[in-house]
Each structure stands twice: as structure tokens, then as C-alpha cells.
Length: 405
Ligand code: GDP
Ligand code: MG
Image (cartoon, rainbow, N blue to C red):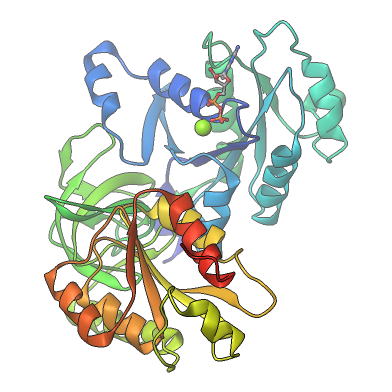
């Protein structure tokens, strides 16, 4: 990809900061300030990212605020953010997650612009916020440092255009460029299983151009692009660098942070199969079947040292939450390990995997299909379905402690 073939591309922005400091409100304010009334109907369309036009230039905002999502993507090798907006409430000041966000952005070497939000509040004290940020090596420009800090109010929609201007300024210094004349390369921003449409993935195209009919691979999923929908809910035929689009046509639900590439069909299938095989190899540990009911007894007898669990849920966010909470459960004798997690109904292959890994299956807002139910009976795999996360966590905890009702 010779540099001379690259052309300027819009910057991609992630909004981070402490809970309740106004990340979601700021994203909303930016979106609403920049849609004309004609388009207003389109803003309900949600694809996990959106593009705004400011003074004839485009800026892309990722819709999942917070550094956890940012770092989860980075852990998969995805680098999607060009500029991080750090939101700090002017009345609350620097809080623990503010510091975390600073560290995550720094670790990723992403420039930070600070939005000092809620300046409409009676208790707002922007200078105090600057002082606190200076202690974390973010020195404001007006104090001779190099961090841009913009006072804003997401509620009153003040300072929004200043912020957008600063984003363009910082982006310009980065000289962001990409070659549109290549097979598409991008990152999965989010993905889910849609009842009618099958796997649906929001993709940020980063290099090349993605077209209808292209064969793509993302993680262990692959397929032909059947349809693409942009952030305004319009069908599009192609997506250039720095364009977020919803993509239909994958055969499975990829994970946020999976890298997407366009390639020929044979390669896509081959690579997907190899990745699936490798994943199974890592997941499978032979043992005898586990069940929550006799778990405590078997732990006591020293027969089980690790409780393996397969997690299936309706959305990726739940999986992440459930996985993190489950893996925190342990006592002196046993620890909990999630050996496989995925979006969608519990299938026969989940059951076979659970059987091989001596895992039990926890389904959250999903159920086993007919084949899975049959397989679970034959394989004697314990399948439990829940609608409340705490019920699932309580059952696992109780089983480990021998207190299952
Ligand atoms: P997030 O957790 O960072 O996404 O924060 P939210 O956007 O959900 O905002 C948290 C709370 O602060 C909500 O009650 C908002 O209405 C309020 N809030 C957000 N921005 C402003 C602002 O500019 N001024 C005032 N007064 N309140 C705000
Ligand atoms: Mg929020």
C-alpha cells in the first residue's frame, strides 16, 4: 500500500470518561446539533457509530462510550480510535474512571481532547478540573501545556462546535490517510443476531472499499456482503475508509474487535475453518460430565477443580458482563472458567463442545433449539436458562458452596 496512493480520511472518535459525567449526553448533543430536521427521523437508526459533517468535513463517532469497550477491542488487536474525547464533569472533577480512561488512551497512544462538561451547573469549576488533570500530566493549552480542553454543556448544547473544531484540528495534525482502492479492511464495532436478518455486524471500514457482493471474513465468521446500511438507515452499495456500516451476510456473529478482511471465497472459508478448529482445540479438555446438582460433592472429593461453563446470550454486552462476573466466583477448591461464549440460541454444537469440555451451559435470554435439547439429553449436559443475571450467578455460587436449593 504505497503512501502516495493514500487519500485523506475522516477521523474516528471515541468518547470516554467517568460514569455520569455525560458521555452519552455529549454523543447525543453532537448528533442532534448536526442533523437537519429533514434527517431527524434518521437519528433513531442505531448502528453503533455515526458520521457528522462539520464545516464541510466529516467526523466519525463510535457510539459505545467508555474505555472498557475501547480496550476490549484493543485486546483483539483492533485500533480504531484516532482521537479520544475525555469527558469530565465540571462539578464533579477527576474521578477514578477518568484516570483509567486517561491511562487507556495513553497506552494506545491516542491523543486526548478534554471536554469539560456540565459547565451550566451551579457547582461547575473548570479551573479546578484543569488543576486536577494537570496532576495527571494533561496540562491545558492556556497554561502552556499541549492538551486542548473545551468547556461544554451537553444539556444546553454550548461549546459543541468548538469541540468539533478542535477535533478537526487535532485530526489534521495526524494527517490521517487511507487507500480506498484496496480490498476492504476494517474492524467489527458490534454485532448481534437478528431474528429476521441473521448475523448483523457494524463494521468500521479502515482501508480499501467494501462493496455489496464482496466476500468477507471476520474472526471465525465469513460470508458474502448481502446488504449494507449506513448510519442514517440508508441502503448503500459501497463503504469507503472511515465509514461505519451495518453489514448483512455473515454466517455467524463475530465479536466486537474482530478484524474484517475482504478476500476470495476459498480463502475466507479456509481461514474460518482453521480458526474454528483452533478455538475448539483450545477449549476442549476431556473430563467427566459436570452438573450444578452434584457439583459440591464432586468438588469435595477433589474430582473437579475447575467449573467449566459455556455461556450463550442474546447480545454481546450481556456475554461480557456474565463472563466477567462468573469468572470472579470461586472458593478455595474450585475456580470458574468460561470456555466458550457466543451470541444466539443454544445449538447442538454448543452442547457437543460443553460435553467435550465437561462444561455446563448457561443460556441468558436464549433457549436450546430442538437438536440441542436432544443432544443435551444424550450427552448428559446440564443446560440452564435464565432471564436475570443475578439468578445465574447465585445458582453457580450456591452450587459451589453446596447450598443449591
Ligand atoms: P454517562 O454515564 O457518562 O453516559 O452520562 P450521561 O450522559 O448518562 O449523563 C449523566 C447525567 O448527567 C444525566 O442525568 C444527564 O442528564 C446529566 N448531564 C449530562 N450532561 C449534562 C450537562 O451538560 N449539564 C447538566 N446539567 N447535566 C448533564
Ligand atoms: Mg452513558
